[in-house]
Length: 211
Image (cartoon, rainbow, N blue to C red):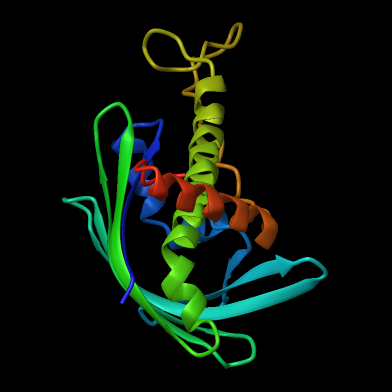
């Protein structure tokens, strides 16, 4: 059973990053090619991931249960998936933990199994593909954090924390603009993913352990 133990860093403090990590819809928007199904609410989060292999598009459907420990900033995940042809099945479990002070260190620990035609590929290169996906996710999450911080930084306030008074009128507290709606991450290209996976594999050969 392949296992994964990886870390990635988000250049923002955990107090800023963890609320975003606690929102599955926002998390899905950071995973390339991922989308959530509209019928949620029974404790399971259902969705799919589209992967482009040249002119061909493959879709993998799955569902996951998420249990949050907000005090420890930890999420426990149990998931399963199936490819669009129903030939390969996957089971995965693990934890995601956020720690740090000025920056957020995300630690991902888990294991997965794949049965069917993709079993050999998953056993041989699944860890490197997972590292590549984590790198893509980290980049997109950092971008989302920056986008969420930008509107708040742009709102003018005075020393009292209120908006400047309008001429001849009372001082009015500044209303923060609503956060922008998350945009889905770009559809995953197998070529880019496999390139990142190759870098991960080469890194492990030379003792770096990361792409």
